Image (cartoon, rainbow, N blue to C red; front, side, top):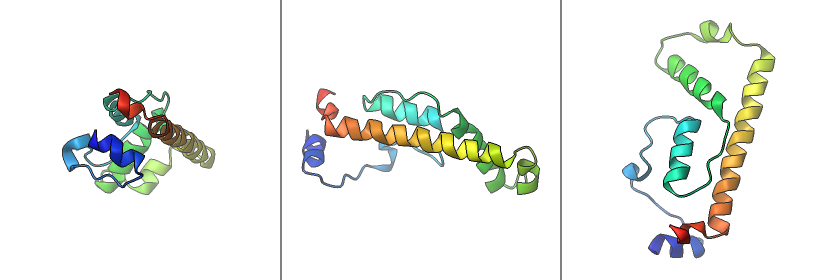
Length: 108
């Protein structure tokens, strides 16, 4: 109930690192798991986040170069990835806003 009061009082919440269990970067599947854990609605789509996450990890770990990964994508592909990711994350944020605004946390 302390969390609910803090949300209602518009306070900043701090969670322990293992509360949500995020390690590194996440994809849509992990976002869905977190939303489910807190009783939020599951947002469909987001399939491109896994590709983006995997390619980003390949780059970060030196497994592939930008040229090796980039040769498989057109500018249109990249714009589509950006637009779909932006739409997905916007939907996730809308769901979180709805969850807080409608005090759905009181139901769990």
